[in-house]
Image (tube, rainbow, N blue to C red; front, side):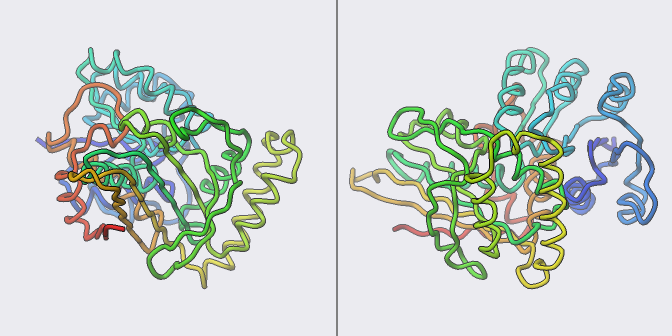
Length: 368
């Protein structure tokens, strides 16, 4: 029997990348949603007759519930997630439908995790924070932690080239992430840090090389300390070219906080930034790199550091792969764990390594 996948927000850059991955690697029939039919070449026209469109507005509960009920798996890709509630996940639980998403917001992640008991009782597997970061990045950390006898410190760094090929939504997500200080797990206690501070230069694989990264609020900042008994978990983000880092630092640190919390200002900054990347993407590319460093002690009790890194030439495609692989495993019954889980708590390292191989994704790693 052919399985049915519903991709909410499936006509966006990320959603269409997920759909492409699933068309390539599964036999599922896919329904992508959007608010209205749009002119031009749509994702369903591009990907063929296994993909169809359905107009669904997230505020239309009846239409949303009907679409979910007709599905075997729901993938939520309608970001930015900072202001999303967990209604899609709740409806999936109510209807007994498995769920995954590309959420990247601390607030949304907490709202989703609050439904843990309900999902477990309903027998629904919900894997959140999939994609490239969070997502593949979380599994890279788990891979590193499992190489050590005892892990003490996690340092995750991310760099995106220009727009990342993900459209204006990624710009909105960046500026929304600058609005408030956030709690980070440092030396065994929660300490408040300000986004886009404490610049650090990280050596990423080619073509990026040395890139400046800054504190940035990601769900991993609190799910990783919950997943692994470490004393410190650092999440830092940067862009290429470096000009954007300096501009973002100015907005985060010199602008009045009230301006950053004004939706019109956020939209203005997002649109201007997106137009700028339309020029710089031509030489910076739209790729992504993730570097994970886990410090601790090896089996002999000696200090050891395990590093891993991954690079892809499109952040949007990499996100689609991260979510698509989780969806494939769920559809095939290889990833079944009733409840709501960040990806590092649900996906084993052997399964992660094997599914990455099917996509040609190479995780390079070495000991420091």
